Length: 153
Ligand code: SF4
Ligand code: SF4
Image (cartoon, rainbow, N blue to C red; front, side, top):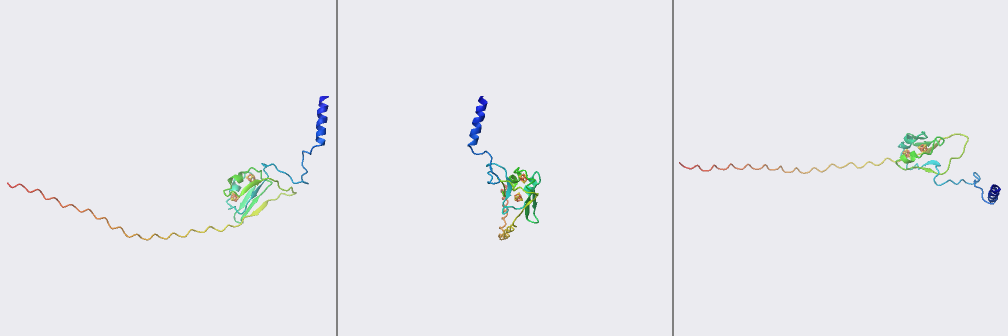
């Protein structure tokens, strides 16, 4: 009998409380703070070094230096975060939110602005020739000491 009472209590409580589920997609999804959503890139910082591509376990990233293009296949990405960790310019991040559902697989492509080549440092001027140091004078040879006068016989 007690179990029926517990059941009835739960049923009545649920009748008057908010649903535990959300109304997505009719309402925007709320992602937990630490959820691993998708990889984003700040193309202005990217130097197309390719470290992310080499560190990506499933090979989801491709860096095309010749075309200044960075691509990611989000269907292959497993959100492990290695690329974010390895990027020397810290231009990658994992942000909450999943990609839009779609009927076809596609690759996201980002054009990386070409950075101006760093200015070469001005050629160092040759150092002015220093005047030759005067040659060290050779120590004068001491005059041989005069022999002690011989005692006359
Ligand atoms: S590691 Fe960073 S800087 Fe290098 S190509 Fe990838 S995103 Fe660009
Ligand atoms: S999060 Fe992991 S799987 Fe996704 S692109 Fe980065 S390295 Fe590759």
